[in-house]
Length: 114
Length: 118
Image 1 (cartoon, chains in turn yellow, brown):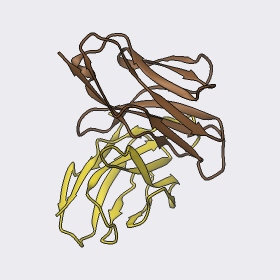
Image 2 (cartoon, one colour; image 1 turned 90 degrees about the vertical axis):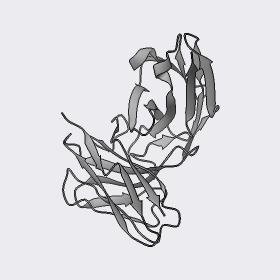
Image 3 (cartoon, helix red, strand yellow; image 1 turned 120 degrees about the vertical axis):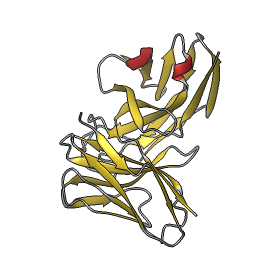
Image 4 (cartoon, rainbow over the protein chains, first blue to last red; image 1 turned 60 degrees about the horizontal axis):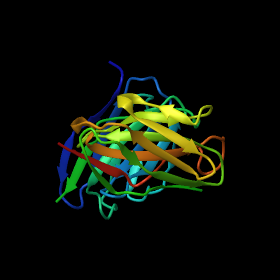
């Protein structure tokens, strides 16, 4: 089955530690995205990538970093510089950035920083 | 720049009643419009989308939405809801054109939690 996998589903970390969230897709999509979801705020774009070895900051990139070394993979690192990292993180992909392309979402990772 | 406002944060309704979830948007360019549904602790699933053509769009699970350009709205409707429709619903827009700082970005509303009571 084609789709997007995110692991782990739940993640707990101590304050001050960096943590990396995994996102893998087998849809052969060029574009990938990371969103952060907080209650009552909808989804906010952290980073996106149009193609391998290229990525752009979204609206709330501070305290996060990404890499895109393979087409299928777009890991997100939440660094200790992120002031309020506890949230639900969603990865998505689409065939390209063009407006009529639907974005497909993974099941999400809930990160809790203690 | 573009923005999306979902006018109701929570909508309670009884089973088999009709429902409307309201969405207004603001954009300086033409946009495509989307509705997504999210069940608890899951990712988002596309319900329907408006790209062009007929302003009445039909989606999955019996939902439909109407694009009203003059009122910049894209309200979601279902004539008879089920308990299984309980979820959070997100309206989103994306610019149609290439280039610019909004290119390729989906802008989401804050979400509307639909709760269907027996």
